[in-house]
Length: 389
Image (cartoon, rainbow, N blue to C red):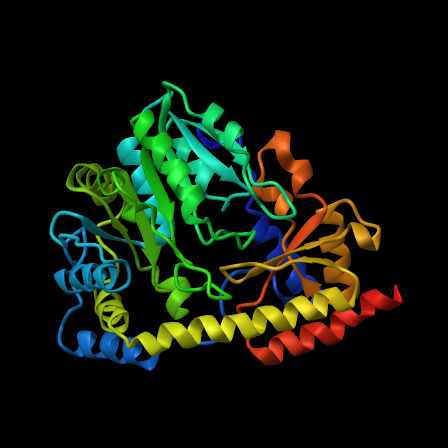
């Protein structure tokens, strides 16, 4: 008799990324589905890793991270957000943002606690809450402008609410939560004594002069916010798995209790590389956003050219495109057609919704533009086949 999965994971299906990646490989499709760049990160980081290896930094580090990286994260927070953070008691280095979110849930969510999550959502959010014994409570961002209903959000808060998770800039919609929206969220957190988790891995990828605001910057929120970010998106080192959590000492202590038993530490030499690259000149961050904005505009024009309804993102590196104009109302069916007949892979975003709200995503697909211009140009050539279908 075969062994069965534990009850806490038995309801989970295979990741949509696995399904679409296999589909893309089968049809040799250009992959605009996955959110990792096909370019390498800055040389300064790689040089620092090599130097760390040669210097003998090859053994276990402290579970919560090497001091040099924690100090670099603190300096980054002060430099860009005027946050004063203690690297000894308020910063934890993690195995990417995903492990940070997992350790937050394990360290702070009790069975029966509710966690408010905006949807569509990055696919690890709900499983992390469920594995900790909590209950996700979903509030939809409604197309075409991806706004939430203030009354719907207020109704989601109750005596069982333990936390709210805010992803800004947002994957997959590209929404950047405004200061007014964040102030509304902050007020509800304080009213209900709820802590906030912010996933800000796309913090430096914002367009058209829009400001990225940290929830922790708002009055009364520094003491109740855990800010998560990572090396992956800003520096194109998605495989290094270096992330961090910034938060007040009480929340940080709880995260560290869980984190220390999830893994011993993140890779020691890579932490030194991360510390080096975080101190890079501000020009890097400016050019990063400008480069991605040019790629956004190019892909948006290519998608519109073939009849897709483009929702132009304010941040991150994804475009949500409506497919109804092409006669489709099923995102999975369209993605299968796109890979097999057109030779381009995209993600069906209904996978990022709870069951009651899947219909909100079924008439869209998500394209990633974190690729070289050559890749995007080749994708455009293939997308033109849609016009002749």
